[in-house]
Image 1 (tube, helix red, strand yellow):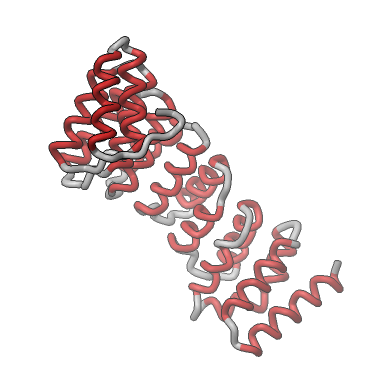
Image 2: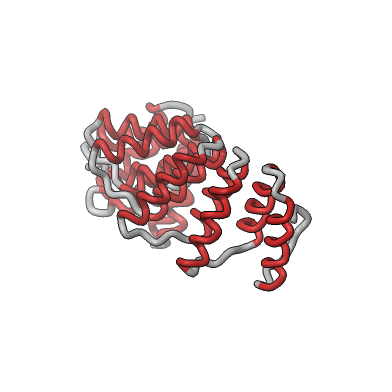
Length: 261
């Protein structure tokens, strides 16, 4: 193992000699992937830490390539090497994390070490929880943003409304959509689509059609997914005439129909 690690260190040195930033990051990521614990990560990073004092961006690029456990060891090694571990480093780890559990651990680690969590931190985390169908965690993070006065943007609301859609929380989805308007944020096809889908899941066809009318008034593009969800909501509510009317509206607007339609 020592010999293998020595050869990896040689690859990193060669990449530095060639002065190719991409090759250095790739070589470091490869070496760290093979590190089994904190001690091995520290050994791999020992020659790099001094350089990262003046070039912290390289550490950020490496973190984007690492699995969660290895990234956690790397962040710990950076702290022990007296590097300023900042929000950009943590956000890189969050963006690389494929599982919502890992994302929650990274956010908790930020809080533990006093690293302020910004909009990007929360947005990526809410999105990860939403994708993992963990709507309680997603909405809990949204509440934390309010508690810690972290600014919310369109992506915050989009990810949060998507979490509501997956859970069928149509009333909360509409509330968040209203918050966007109050905050002066643009409500696009994606957030309307998720909100209408949340209404559809609960058979709330009047709410779905209200949002469809609102899209028309706001001149927001209505795509196939929006129409499909609205038609489905009407069908579930026994509103077949309204469903047929929406099919006609699709044709007039030249919106492409799919197998769901």
